[in-house]
Length: 468
Image (cartoon, rainbow, N blue to C red; front, side, top):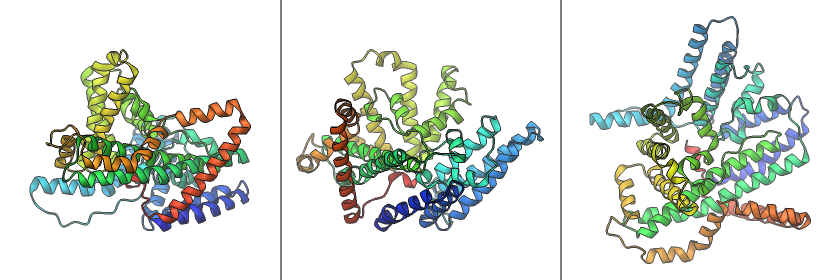
């Protein structure tokens, strides 16, 4: 992992960027596509064939769906066949092991079968493909006739392995023509650097606190320490995933693409529903557009609304991982959002802002326990620690030892998860642009030095969402 991080940052990315900018307008797509396929093959040398096969098959199907000489029945058969193929591949590689384990547990027997390894990014590029096919079928977009540009849309390395999920309609015009400017390149580079710093400097280091608490939880930790630990995990997963999204958006901008935002400071939310409008926006939009609205959305009765939310949040949970704890995590949030829609919506509007923030943060933080622990005993044991139901102390010596070690980092992470730093920077820029420019140059130079130092000296660099 260390070698891969250094290779990507100091070899692959600079060489790809230089070749991309030196190539003429007609060859930039080829450079970016070859680089993307090489990037994926570096991590998944076997599964590059799976992705390439998926690209070719779905390209052909989409063009069949876009033809006018087929009747509706034929088009529907093409669509259903392609959906079955794509979802079947996803189910086999991602959920085959879960299905076998579940059947084995119910039947109390073992199956001697080979569980396939999970291809990196299959959840993301499969959802992009499904959205593309459905949009073509519904007539929202026309199928891409250029195989090279379609392959680039699916395999573009900045967002290939961990999103954000990019709708074809959002970058259709950019695939055929995009402008490269020094302003765009420098803006993208700064965004990429900020995302890398989120991951390397914040997510990795606050994650060490969570690992210590998680390990100690087997023997018992204080209630306060249990809350601090899962809050550390909440910050870790935010900076990890939003950091990757920033890197993808920044890289896209460097190559002339404009991807939509994927995070908008979710931990400042005043409700659970608002949290999910701010967290992993591309995934939430995908489920809203392609599952929730086709099911009827919220323009239905209470029981049908409950069913729609159950389906969406069951799928949201299982999308995140092939384990029943993710299903529980999804249904937990589905129940919370249903409760807000049916009971709490008008009441929340009357609560003081601080109460709304605390309520949202508590619900979300408890939810991360379901997300992180795979077994039911582990989940409930940790919840008991959090709520003081395990005969554990309120504070304890462990808390004070970790407070001295991590308090400054914890505070930096909390501030960094809010729009405060951005608002301060905008205020300085408005007051004195020269001072802002000088401070920004110092800031990015410092980030570059610190990130480089941590990359060279650290081996703990996995992105959490790579496993999805």
